Length: 364
View (tube, rainbow, N blue to C red):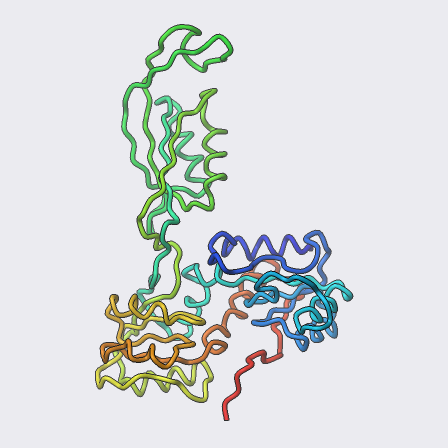
C-alpha cells in the first residue's frame, strides 16, 4: 500500500477542488510513492500525535486540520509547526489533510453531525456557487448514445438525486472539409449536411477535463464542436452546512441536553430560548457563523455550529436559537468519517484513531 493509494481514496470522497480558496489540503509532508505500514487518524497534527504515530509504527497521519495552513518562509525548530515537520521527515512519516473539501460534501463534516443527531430529510445548507458548467456538443445521430453515455460515465449529468440528465435536440449540421482533413463523413472540398443531435448537460467544474476527454474519445468527428458555459445556478451537490429534521419536535431544553450528550460538551453558548419546539435543525461543523442567514432563510429552529463572536449572537433577532458547541466538538466525528472511508476500502490494513485529545480549549 502506498501513500497515493490512501490519498486517492480520501480525495475520491472529497475532491481537493471543493476546498475554499484560503485552504491547504492534500499531501502536505512526505512522498506519494512511499510504502505505508499504517495510518493514524486525527483532527489536528500535534507533537503528541506525531509521537503516537512513531510509537505505534504508523507512517501516515491523516488529519482534518492542515498542519501547514499558510505559506511557510522557513522550516526550523523555532516554531511548533517547524519542529513537527522536521521530526516527521526524520521518521519518514507522511502527513495528509482533508479540510474544507470534506466540509463541502453533503456526507462530510456536517453530514456526520446530522447522522449523530439522527436527522432525516437532510440537504445542503449553503449550496456551492459558481461551480457548475453546461456542456453542449453536436454529434452524428447514430453516435449520440455512445457519446452521451461516455459523458455520463465521466460524471456529468447529475442534478440532485437524478443522474444521466441531458437535453437533446435533433437538427442538421453543416461543414466543408479542407484538403488536410480526414472527415468521418462527407468529402473534401464539398459542403456536407449531416443529421446531428445537440446534447446539453451539466457538470461540476472540477471534472471538466475528465468529461471533455471522455467526450472527445467517444466522438467520431476529427474536429469536435462543443461549448462550455459557466452557470450561476446554485449546486446542491456540494456546499457548507446541512439542514435536516428530527423525527418528532422536542422541547428546546431537551434538544440542548441531547447536544451536550452527543457531542460530549460540558457547556453550550446559546441565545435566548424562544419557548417553542425544535424540529428543523441547521448544522455547520467548525466556524459557521457566516451561515446564520442561510439557517434563518431555511426556517431552522436552531443553528448548531461554533466560533460565534459576541455581537454575532444578536443577529439571531429572537427568530432562531443559536447553539455554539465548540469548534473541536463540532468536528470531532470527522475522525470516524475518515476511518469509515479507509476501512471500507482497505479492510485488512492498519488504520487507527488517535487517542490524543487535540482540543486546545479547556473548560473550568
